[in-house]
Image (cartoon, rainbow, N blue to C red):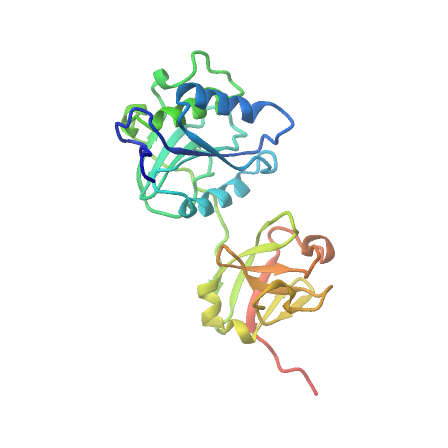
Length: 277
């Protein structure tokens, strides 16, 4: 991005992008206060809202978002995530530098599976980068917002010592079975009620996606569709979504509500059985 300073370089605060992901919602002023702190420090920064509708304290869902967004932003983008049920406790505030981006937030699992290799991690210790008074309940405003703003023109090492251990969630992993099929589970629902699984498209190529049977609960989907309306309305379908994951959907409907699905439901992909004539 021409003219934009990359975090960690001596740019004098002349540019850069900061994204915000929180569970704050928009009814309260919390997000706007964070933006005010950032822009008061560096008015030239661009702020992008990823989402503020993470369910309260849902670290797992925040981790999914953090693992997914980095590749779609310019190199050097600073991603701030504040889903922080342990705020005010002993959990560490951290900066994570990967090969592409920077991440700022609590060390509570939200940065479990980033989409590029971690190069450097530090614990935020230096108080000169924080607001004058740090509350026990609003580190988004008093710690993470001012740190992100100053990270746009300050080397990572100046914020504190190296992080000893990055907290990682025990995330479910798909597996290939001896029969050639794949087993996984539902990990996320979007606002349309579509069910994201943890089964990646690369695994489906091995399983033979076009001829596969996708089963979960009492449902069976025969084959992976090329688009949403390729199956009749009211019946379950499967598609490879924009994240490269197997997704269960209902055409023009809501799979979550119509089929009684929930996070953690097991999903199996295998060879479809021939139907009796």
